[in-house]
Image (tube, rainbow, N blue to C red):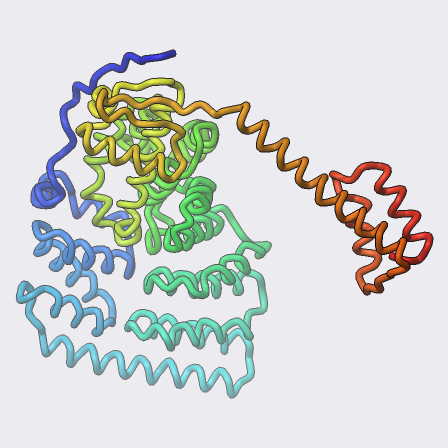
Length: 457
């Protein structure tokens, strides 16, 4: 097929610049609906992140964050929100003084309870006291002491359920602080628990996905999110929402899966379909990508981008994932053809020919596309592999290897004729390597045996 016919994109150009998107996002993004998918400190941290990164939503997000933080004893986070708000919110000295006294009294009580439990030498009582103290440290924002308390409960766990609870406390602490140092070991430990139910398994899969996403291991992250059992209620809203699992899993899969994997593990997967139903635009985007409707697919991506950039876990990966998805689309678009008109291709990808030429040149340099560009006629031609040259190079390589082995054999014969022998500790290893070498002639094996029988080599 020398040329191709492509339906031109009639959906218009991509959305305007990110600044314009950011300024108009308040009309499209319902902050209250979005944030109600979360609970606990995850909710507060997301609100602060949105306030810091989206000017139109700044006032609303800071006010909501303040309201949420006042439900907790965390004075440090309260002060952070006030200071970050740049005068939008005012410090309340009376609130700070009262909460400080209350926190001090509660801390003294919990420490006293722990000391009493230790003096009584009852394992369950000590575990309860350590856990309560760790939970309080976690709530006031003292993450170091919280971690110490949670880890200490390990010595007093008497059932698998206790161990599972301890693992989840440490994992949740790591997610809130975005410090995944302890995540792999405690995820693995929790997965071995015999009391692991569907909800707990869903939490572990999603956190494992976050851990791999944080490390830019996108394919592994995609697999973990896709394998997450579907739970309609927000049973783990203190970590992640079902919509997040759809976004994270879907985008990572688009960036790393081949067509067969995308069809089998994403589009046709009965469990992940439930997540995609929660985000219809993402479902349509993935289907368009698989059905090679790249113009529509890229339009969906452009529309989602401002919202994805407000996600506390995904924002720093958006550009990388988008670039990989676009590169995959370019490769798949060109793969069936011998020749493509770059003007038509540029229209299909919502770009101009100059920019498209730069993108394709980069893919050619990275050996992702076997093609050459005709800049004058604005065409892209597939580069055929030269089978004759390839065969000749392989023949030369095999001949060179045979020549080297023959020279080695002749050298051994000359050494034998002159009564020269060598002693090596690797005698048996060398013999095995010689006998199993794929390019040695059967006669050479026989001659090697003769030499060995003469005890010279």
